[in-house]
Length: 556
Ligand code: SF4
Image 1 (cartoon, rainbow, N blue to C red):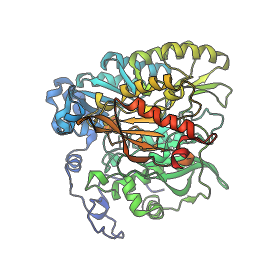
Image 2 (image 1 turned 90 degrees about the horizontal axis):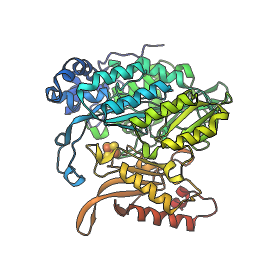
Image 3 (image 1 turned 45 degrees about the vertical axis):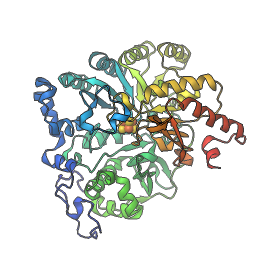
Image 4 (image 1 turned 45 degrees about the horizontal axis):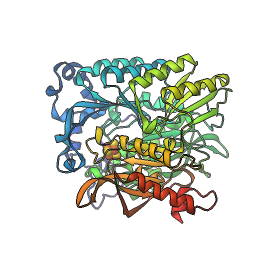
């Protein structure tokens, strides 16, 4: 097996014809940085900023931070300046991103599908309470995201994370971002294969490795052995999806090139089967193709999906095999189809006779206090651990069957329901204007109010309708794959520009994976959102054919 831990020196591959238009690919000899992001990464490996944070910036304070670190390399440590208060969406459009910088940071902590012990949940809660004004959101990439972080407090926060077996390393930046792992890996009764060991090995080998710290842009990983495909594999740069090969048995189907935002693309199946112990090498091969052949000239074309779209899957597979793995991959004649609901909310069977219990915070909004309370409940009821999900949910693992009923009551008391309404269960929201510098509109608070209003108007909704609320076109909460996808923008109302949303209808992941239809005429003000959704849902409920689902109804 060739060593995939390449040096970060770009290789030159002469057999690939030179692109007609220079895209800045290292493999074609474009090693001189073609934009300021590439220059910054070449000037200094972003991983080096860790020492400067620990030994200089945390001691001398915010004003001592080199601007190139502040607005660039800090991201590799999961730190992002948050939006200064007082700028509404209209003002945002007039300003450069730097002008919106606050002196506080967002800190993203990756969980990578790990099982969090009660003590780890308690530690996450303590960070929120002690350093983040009690913030602690569960994101749709299985992260905990804090706000109001001061650079002076980062060393102590990292110490606590380290003690809990957690990290913020490469949680942002042009790097291998936090992994999505199945929240029920190793425990679900209906699991095809447990991929936890592969994700752990990828983390141990490659996170913090300079060979992968300068990718063209972000690189998102998902891995699941659960039949529901519970990690949104369609929207990741690389995804390993549990499958059973007719000759070789359980393993993973490999998908590449998924991504949303502008020019969305669902991940493409390479048609190969990867055994569990070869997943880390296959991951490194895909990441290496991206590093060496990915487009670096324009940030807007620097995601893997553009390369996959240009090459097609046959060429992608061939380059992986010939240049990075040195062998042929096993073809998979029967790629897997997803079965069942993906969010794991409610009570479900484990293979060991115990239960797992999925909880639904409202649009992922938790707090340090709530996490600390959850840790106490986990101790009280002998719960083994917790995992975060790609749907802004929390799953408790290892609950004794006779303790489920009192546990559910206790969870309701602290505000983490395992029996939520359809609206609470199926609505997600990104960070939005409260903290995100790219946001145009408020999302979390708006979505929370929307959930409350829809629960009042449709208390007995009998079918899931997903609502994903995003503060801008970046689609962090996956605008295009929701039944009702909302993309934040300014809209006109009575001659004024006000906060609102472009609507996408009928998107889905899973069996009917598809992008929602962007209906140009469907732009709604934030104030009019409750009534707009009510109208759409009423039309659906009146017009649906039997048990037709929302996406099918839209596609009619
Ligand atoms: Fe920020 Fe836009 Fe992402 Fe929301 S979708 S978190 S507003 S970048």
